[in-house]
Image 1: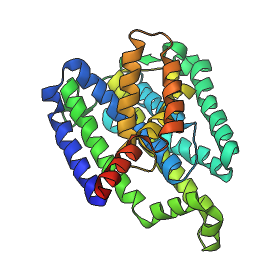
Image 2: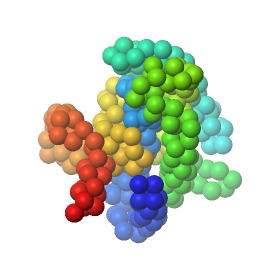
Image 3: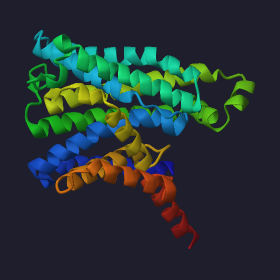
Image 4: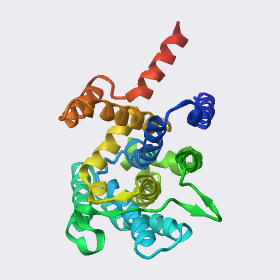
Length: 311
């Protein structure tokens, strides 16, 4: 499966590089958005698919990073080389605080992360003098580093593609490392890992912080892509959508979050064009996947490969 994964990653990279020459401006914008939200789903997937914890607060890290970039560049005129790292740092720092939630398990973890996410969402709405309230922060400039500007949609697409590729490479190294094996061991049997001398709480905390850093990186890219950020970016809807992307694509996989992001965002854009209650459709999709395809798209693909091999 490792060689197949490598082949799929290389194939997707080649397809990604050629995409600007194959797609229209609309589709290039949608694909860029899919890559960004796929990265957010990847952060959620680290906790859900490998640690077995269902987090509902990753939109908070996503939003804090986006707001940091927006405020520093729009209001204080700081350059990208300061604003972007600051966004990732503050989002990860919030993850260090919220990471204390790993002391809980099951439904209690879900409720704690849900409450934490609502704190950031509430601050975004109520602290209007700083965050702009419902109006948010607008006119975020394009990222510019050492004279290179990603103002052009194609240039920004390639920037997102490079960042995502490096993130996927690092993510793959992480989940196949001894640390990643310990996480999966904790998911399968925490008490057994504890009896073997491992510290589950410490491993889960580190995983939570790493996942927050990935979500923060996605938030920075989102701010530059959208050129606007408001409290909706910290809403429960974004967190749930990121979880849905991971589940639809297939938990415990590398490519699953990206596939899930493509399906969820593609379906949302299509359905919302003619049906106002498109969120109800997304809910039905989630229910259908959980009942009939719990392994997601990657699970179906793996089953198809196994059946083909047996024949």
